[in-house]
Figure 1 (cartoon, rainbow, N blue to C red):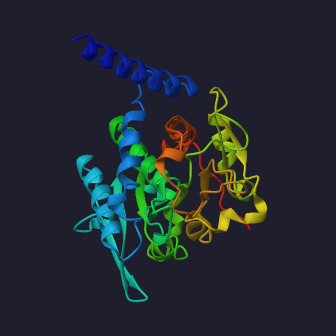
Figure 2: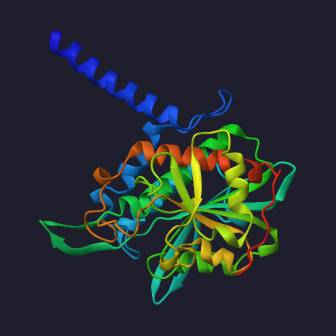
Figure 3: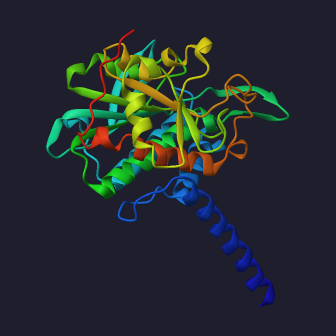
Length: 319
C-alpha cells in the first residue's frame, strides 16, 4: 500500500511540474481554452512513433499519420475543404499518390476571408541504420508543427469566435520540394487569403533563449510586427529569422502561398546552424522539450488572434 501511495505522489508531482512550467511562460486569459501540454505530448509521441516508419510519402507509415490527423479533425467536427467528401485533397506526382489533409473552421462575420494554419506531416522514412535505428522519426521536423496545427484546431474550435475562416492543413511531400503546398496554392484564389501561419520545428529552445521563436521573411510583410504587438504583454518574444543565409522563407510550405502574394510566414525555434539531429534518425521525441512546444503554440495562438478575429490584416508579401 505504501508503494502505491509513493508512486501516485511522484506521478502527481511530475504532472504539477509540467502544468506549472508550461502555464507560467505565456499568460492566457482564464476565459479562453488552454493549450494542453498533455495533449501536445500525445500528438507528438504518436506522430513521431516508430509505427509511422518516418512518414515517407507513398508508404504505409504516412497513411497511418494521415488517418490520425483525419481522426482528430473528425473529432472536432471540422468541415471539409470546398465541400469535399473527406479531409483529403488528393493528387498524384511522379507516379506517387499524395494527399494534403485539410479541415475547415468556418468564420462568422468574415467567413469569405481565409487564414491558413499549416505544417507538413511527411518526413524521410527509412535511412541507413545508426546504432541499429533506421527510422527517421521526424519528431521536430515536423511532427512538432503538426502537433501545433492539431492543438490550434482544438483551441479555436472550443473558442468558436473566429471571425475569419481558418483552414487547417497538414501538407504532404514538403521534403520532396513543397509538392503538397504547391498543389494547394494552384487550387485557390489568393485574393481571399489573408494570412498563412506555417509552423516548422518548434521543439528545441531557440538561439534567443527560453520563451522565444523566430519568424521567416519578417521584412516581407507586416505579419511579424502584428504578432510582436500582440505578444507585447506576455513573456514570449518573437524575432526575425536570424538564419537568412539558409533562405528558410523559401524552404518551407509558407513559400507556396507567399509566391501568390499571401502574407505567409513560418514560425520556428530550431537552431538550424547547430542542430545535429536535423534530417537524421536521431530526430526523436526525447531530444525535444514539451514545454517549448506548448508555449510556442500558446504564443502563436495569442500572436495571431487579431488576424483570425478580423481586427488586423497583414500587408501582402513583397519580394
